[in-house]
Length: 120
Image 1: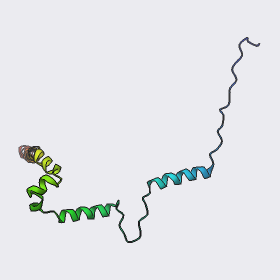
Image 2 (image 1 turned 60 degrees about the horizontal axis):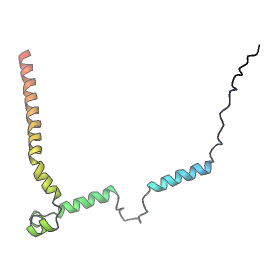
Image 3 (image 1 turned 90 degrees about the vertical axis):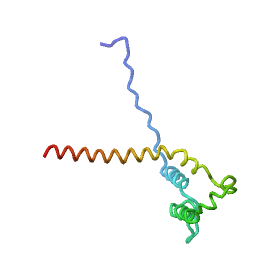
Image 4 (image 1 turned 180 degrees about the vertical axis):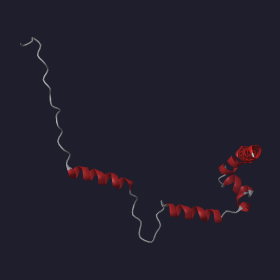
């Protein structure tokens, strides 16, 4: 019993050749090399290291002087005044947030104490 319609034959998926292990290794090494920093001689700190940036930040904090920063000529001409004006702008919001945080904790504590005293 053959029918007039022929069934489609099942086709095998075409197998791709296995990648060359040398090529995969080369790609891995290239990707690894991209993320590596340039070599620094022994005994010198890398400029990108966390330790170096923390040390640099500590030095800048130690060398900070309010009198020289707020001296008019330096303040308007050379100083980075962005953080100062941002602090000035957001001080009311920061104050209100800390105040709300404090009183929320205090009243929650008082409420807990009242509930416990009412139960016993």
